Amino acid sequence: MIQTPKIKVKVVGSGKEGDPFRVNLPTYAMIPGSEEYADAEKKVLKSVEVQVPDDECDDKGRPDKAKIRAKYKGQPRWDRDDILGDI
Amino acid sequence: MRVGHISGQRQPGSNSIITQIGLAFHETDVDPHGVTSRFSYTVPTGRRSIFRLCNAYVIRSVAASQAGRPEVCVDVAGTPIAYCELVGNVVGATDRVDFGTDLVLLSGQTLTGITMDDSTGGTCDYNLVVWLNEYTFP
Image (cartoon, rainbow over all chains, first blue to last red; front, side):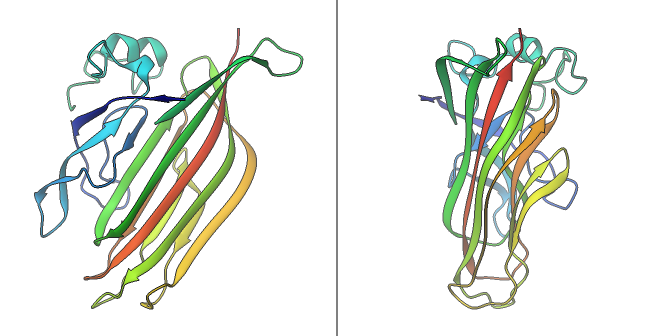
């Protein structure tokens, strides 16, 4: 078993059906209790800590664009130049 | 996130390499919140994954002033495959699902684990566990 490092990333989405709060990464797992809110009263998420597969990270544990593009090569959503723009 | 490589194992009759993928979310006493993708898994290019087992539940831990319909679900390619929803406002009320399956996820398809609670006040406990076997084809 491999336990990858936790990284803080931006949350996108509105929290509605069809547009959930989410992270713009192909594979991730949110860390419970790590949520930061843009509006705490309305529970609008701003950022969260996640874990991502180690083969998608660079040496510092941050998502690596080249590795993600290679792993998801040919998939329109992830094989793009701007994939980490919202992270 | 847990990723296990099973050294030396092969699917019978092929040269596929198996990787185990474990996805989990567990949190107690969670306030009402919007629809949230707690985890996501996308099948890499050139691979396929078999969705092997799932455990999900939601439990009312503190009564709400106005109960909504707290839910926890697993979507595959945008379609729910596991779904739990609480109806009512009794502390300790629960809805859960446990199952094993052999659903094949193709390259590019995404599996997400989602929670939501549209209540006013109160809290719930959530659990979501999914295990997959990912196959690499030579």
